[in-house]
Length: 163
Image 1 (cartoon, helix red, strand yellow):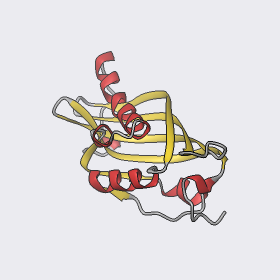
Image 2: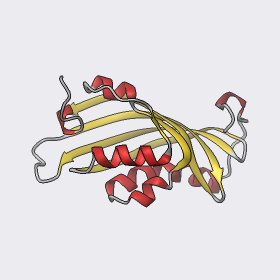
Image 3: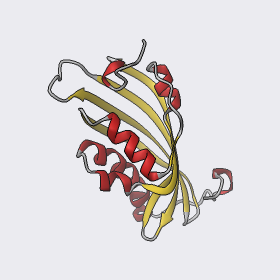
Image 4: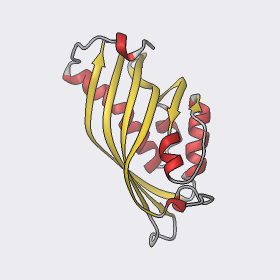
């Protein structure tokens, strides 16, 4: 994957734009549908997912997740007892050269303990992502998640959080 600063500002076709954004839809829907294969299809083998700043704001210290397997293992362990819904808005392809792309989006993620929907954690994030084409599918090489706001109980996602 090229550094984002070296990726051309050429605009993708409508078809390519949809294909790039589809990686983000697979990421969210994979969690919401508890479909690990769909979730994993969004990530390149050696991808990195950085959720460190939101986790810290929620009272937890976590590393950057590295590798498709580790990302999926960690996320699915964290949401194993939750019902989630992810809503993607404002997806913008900010760089594109035909093989690499950068993507920006706002994502709202609702987390509810399965069996106890009286508690919740609603998160609004800015996602910045770098993707590359793998065969006919776009996958994340790097994903950074930054929190805009939250509403609810952080212990829904991080039970040991000391907030």
